[in-house]
Structure formats: structure tokens, C-alpha cells
Length: 292
Image (cartoon, rainbow, N blue to C red):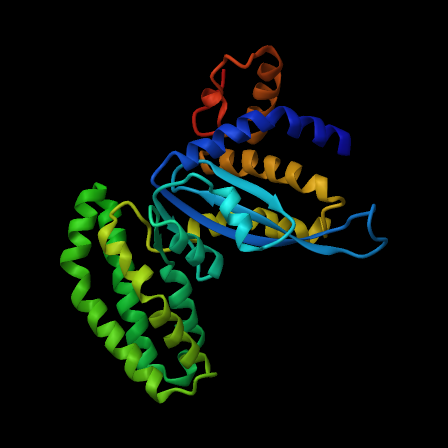
């Protein structure tokens, strides 16, 4: 069965590479990473080390997983090499450092991460934290309303610039006041520090109507692998990690586009052996594939 997976992954790799190129050719990327235990029988017996599945995607488009043996900053550089546009992520330093070294890119942060820290600290200062949560919640209500009216990115940017600045002014002012009163190591202190530390990439959304306020879509794409590793525990060999990344990319992308992964795999694995390097693989990506 392991050989079957290897062979299937090898056949699907050209489609996977096409998906990757398609994402890098766009102007907006969401990125995240998740740890996966890995066993290398050639190097150690019985023990496991930590590997990483890095993930990039764009709302409404394919999802690409990539297997790496570390979380070093250089792993991100090689994953999105040549990309020019908006990069959205959590506060992990690799993303900030990469954008700092690549001025052709813009970094926007995730409001869900900022909100989560205040939610966890609500018991320390209930009234003030609830006010902060209400302001952040109001941002999400605006976004939901604009989604309902199917605003264009240009219109969404115009609405954000019109409606957000005043609320964000009071949000920052409240966070500054709370940080001065909270213990630095407390949950509330850390929540305020996070919000203020990433204030620039959090408020950068005002200038970019195509962005989502949070990284939840890419985090949801990671969820199947996070649930799966509780069952299969670890990757059996470092070389097998990329095969898993290819399979996850295909299956999760099919699910995102509401296409049956089994029907997709059955059709594409039948068609690929008949194709040549001159054939356009774009039609075989989950975003563009149509059942016969």
C-alpha cells in the first residue's frame, strides 16, 4: 500500500506543481504551518523527530501543502520564492522577516489570533476585554455584511477606509491603557502586547480589499492533517512526507471546491499517463477539473 501511495503521488506531482505555480502567480496568499512527527528508520530506531507541513492557499482556490524537516525561516523563502503580493499569516517571525527582506511584498496579520488572546484573558478584566471583543466583533459584522452584498475588492477597501479608522483608534487607545495596568506576564498583558506588536499588519487590511480579516480558511485546510496524525501518529520516513503533502493538497483542494476526491483521483490518474509535456495541466487542477 505504501508503494501505491508513492506511485500515485509521483503521477500527481505535475498537477501539484501546477497548483503551486498558480498560487504564486496571484497577488494574495494565506500561509500557515503545522508540526508532524517523523521517523527516520535509516538514522534512528524507535524515536521520532519533528517535521513540518507548510501550507499556502488563497480564498476560493487550491490549497498546497509542502513537507519540510524544519521550521527555519529559509523554508518559507524556498516555498514562496518569486512571489510578489500580499502575504497573510499569524505572528510567527519567519513571515515578518521574509516580508522585511522582500519589499515587493506586503504583510497582513490575522485578527482571529489577536481576538483569541483577549477571549482567553476575559476573566482578568471582564468589562474592558468585552469592549475590545465587541469592537473586533463589529469589524467581522461589517465584513459579513459586505460579503452578503458581494462587494468588489475596490468597494470593500473604500468601505474599510471609511468605517474602520475611528473604531480602530479607540481599540488601540484601550489596549494601550490596559497594557499599562496589566502585569506583563498575565494573559491580558500578553493579549495587549500581541495586538500592539502587530498593529501595523493588522490595520494594513484597510488598504487591501481582497484580504480576509483572518487566516481561518488556511487553518481549516490544515485540520484534516491535524486530525489524521492523531490516528497515524507519525510519517514513517522523511521521503514519505512530501508524498503526504501532495495527497493532502489534492484531497483538501477537492473538498474546498466541493468535488468528490475519489472521482477526481480516478479520472485524473486515468488521464495523466496519456498526456505529454505539451499538454496543459491547468484543466486537471482541482479548481478547474470537471467530471467527464
